Amino acid sequence: MSQPEILNQAFELGYTYTRSTGPVVGRFLTELKKRNIVGIKASDGRVVVPPMEYDPDTAAELSEFVQVGQQGEIVSFAWVKEPRAAHPMQVPFAWAMIKLDGADVPMIHCVAAAAESDIATGARVRAVWADETIGFITDIRCFELV
Amino acid sequence: MANLAAVVGIGQTKYTTKRTDVSIAGLVREAAVNALKDADLTWNDIDAVIVGKAPDMFEGVIMPEIYLTDALGCNGKPMLRVHTAGSVGGSTALVAASHVQSGTFKRVLTVSFEKQSESNAMWALSNPQPFSTHLNAGAGGYFAPIIREYMRRSKAPYNVGIKVAVKDRLHGARNPLAHLQKPDITMQEVEDSFMLWDPIRFLESCPSSDGACAMVIANEELATKAPKPPAWIRGVAMRSEPTMYAGRDEVNPQAGRDCAADVYKQAGITNPRKDLDCAEVYVPFSWYEPMWLENLGFAPKGEGWKLTMAGATSLDEGGDIPWNCSGGVLSSNPIGASGMIRFAEAARQVRGDAGAHQVEGAKLALGHAYGGGAQFFAMWVVGSQKS
Image 1: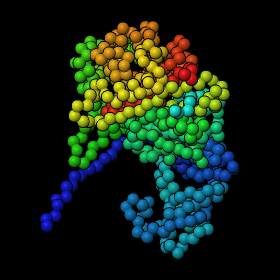
Image 2: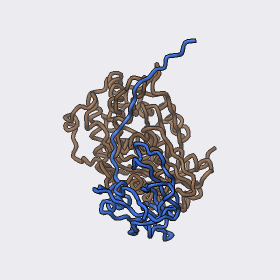
Image 3: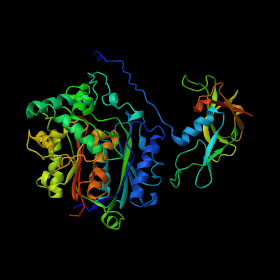
Image 4: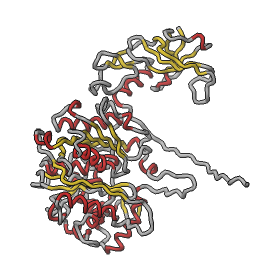
């Protein structure tokens, strides 16, 4: 029996978009450019990093920014043994939930470490800034173990 | 028999080219907060939220309803997203209304939006597909030949569209929320504007706007207690038909005629021009006014343009059936919201709350939206009285 011919056609769909980040996410990104990390105080007093525009419980508009530390501790992590081209590092690294000092919820970022065995829940890490900051989350190049 | 429901709160943003000061969530939130204020309510008074917007590819935010949960106070509440292309603002309002009319919820918030400045609405309308010829047309390119066919059939003079373009902008100049503010616009100015998609000139086309519109819809008991006059929902209807099939009449779509007949029957309307006090109808390109005047039964076939030229649809000329007193889609077009703005503006009229574009003593109004290749239709009739 002959195999059916499979039709192929190259197909790529792409559009250009812009974004206005607004007063809250915009402030977070602007502070990153200045090598600062800010969170926002929620209605129950928790400090949320990155900051969110509206309270998760009451839906109130949030506006009280809080500067948080550039160090924190790992709450949870996943080790990436074989990084792919789209990953932020081309050597093995960890994705981690990091609770920064002064924050009440963890934020996800990447952690540089020589080996998986160096990483643990509770380990202390600090932000490593990019040489040039532009107001984007990658201004924090990664976190490293303290 | 459905339960009675009414619009008890309306909120809009000022329509404009670019709202760079707010995120998409911030824009949507602004309209929602304005609607709650208008109804003298808080987030806690809302049982469910119904969101609508045009195709995700416009802004490239896939499933925006997920991202908007916090902004719309939806935590712990049902949330539903509606999607019917350009008519979505209208069908979103109808889905919201049906949740109240069915008795499922007592009071719902419905919101629709578009941030055209951050989107690619022109080309994301007709995405290329593998093994298909690419249509490669924006809305104007798609509708231009349909308009030309209307002109041929009706033998309308060339300047009917020009007249609509002027009339709706003069209406828009009465509405501080309208995007285009052109109180001095003239027929000559429209005629001299460049031809975009023959026969549609630049000033015969809608603008690209950022904006959001929201309404609170409540059941009879709560609407009766509302602080401001409610707009009672007297009829609701949606119809659709395939974009392309042999024999489809794109100039006067069957789905539009059927949808109008359905909504009129519910509202007890036998002569729309006489029975209605005004209408907010989706007219993104000027010639769609005479076309829809016929499709919606305000004029016999081939004679819609005569109403337009006689000033029957003009507030400024004291017409008997003013269309698009708010300025319409020709004055503001945040696509996903445009249909809901028509529905909300119809409600403002019968609440007596339309400011400088109020039709004196309006008691019964039509809100209309169409979308896709003129294949989705959504309409409602609202009244100052329950029946």
